[in-house]
Image 1 (tube, rainbow, N blue to C red):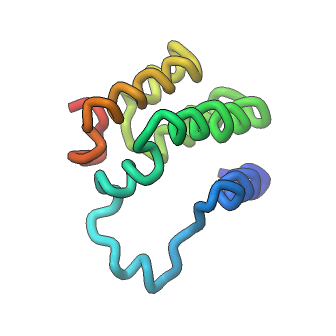
Image 2 (cartoon, one colour):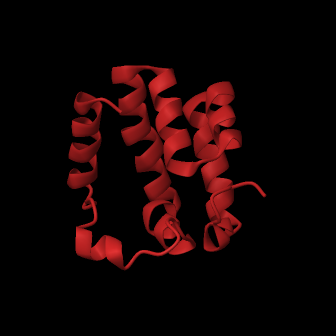
Length: 115
């Protein structure tokens, strides 16, 4: 991710009360993303709306669909979700994330949303 895009992502995260972990906090993380982290970030429709229609839409508008798809893939490590976005756009991404949040799949998130 280039510096301009990272700056915009950081601004959006800061505006919504999110921040990068400190080194001390990183020491306490084991195994990377877990259900708790995904529930915090995307645990309800309001959070998913912000993620898709504010953050992802901003990345898409400023940098294009390919960069947005790369960001989605880097964040979720899930080609299926990335393909859903590329095929159905932001609405498809929103619908799939809502399905996962509603059925509780974030609780058991293991790096693949669709197992």
